[in-house]
Picture 1 (tube, rainbow over the protein chains, first blue to last red):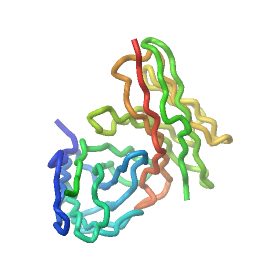
Picture 2: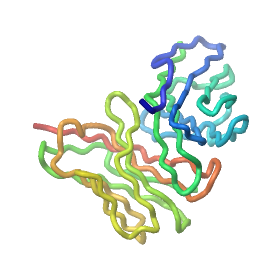
Picture 3: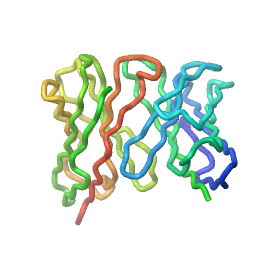
Picture 4: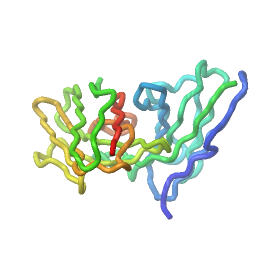
Length: 114
Length: 117
């Protein structure tokens, strides 16, 4: 089965801790994205990657970091510098980043700060 | 910057009836892409339908169709023969023709659709 997996489904973080959200895809897609969803709002882009070892900041990158060591994987780290990290995080991928390639989403991770 | 507006926070439709969800957007670009995504209670975003701005023909996918009015910057979604499984949040999204972070999706705030018996 081809698709995008995210883990864990629910994550709890104490103040001052860094946590890492996993995103894996077996669709052979080049482009991968991280979005954040807050109540009553649409999704906002955190980070984007088009190839291995290259990524670009999105609209709300402060307090987040990413890596892209393998084509299939694009983990997101929420650092202690992120002031309000409680949100729903969605990972997406597309074949490439041009000609309006459709983005497909994973099931998401709900992060709660205790 | 592009913006997407969904002015209907909630809509309700009876099973087997037709409902139309509204979306307007603001852009200075001539080439772009528009999408409707569905987010059921599981919260996974599922693609419903996609429209290329350079195509005049409205996209259709089974019971789902769009009314794309480029000059008016309007992109509404029509759901025919509504089913209980259609109950979800529906998001309208805009994508630029650009690459890199310009390939991001810009979302509206969503419309919650209820389907009643």
